[in-house]
Length: 190
Image (cartoon, rainbow, N blue to C red; front, side, top):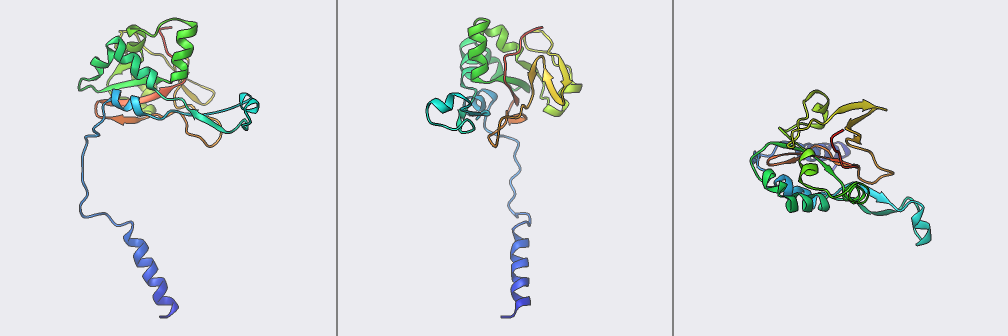
């Protein structure tokens, strides 16, 4: 077998990997509601920081992920999850577990009014937040601003980047009945 035959065979094989499949399945069902997705969504990576030195870790080592289990639990315990069980669509600005813990320690309970303020009617992609009215389920309005080359909803950064190579705050997480954007703090009426 000569060199040109080998090159031709490799090119033909590689090109076939990019050809469309004959049995493409088109579906819009994701089989996951907003509440179901929140319960299993992986949040941003957290590093040890200075606390890691005391336990033999490097500051930049991955400590874990800041997920959304508390938010899903608070939605269920306040009855707001029942609202999200509908067809929607909804857009949810989901605070991380750390954000909810901090809010409950410094402000008070994460109740139904706070949960409803994190949710708006309609499906709004992160790129459209700046041009869409953000009217919440609680009747309030979330303020959008752009500062320091970042998008903010109230005072929370939308799509915040994390330290190092670990995952960022997820945005545009598609669900059957809407979309989820994660934020690093609980938003409340200003």
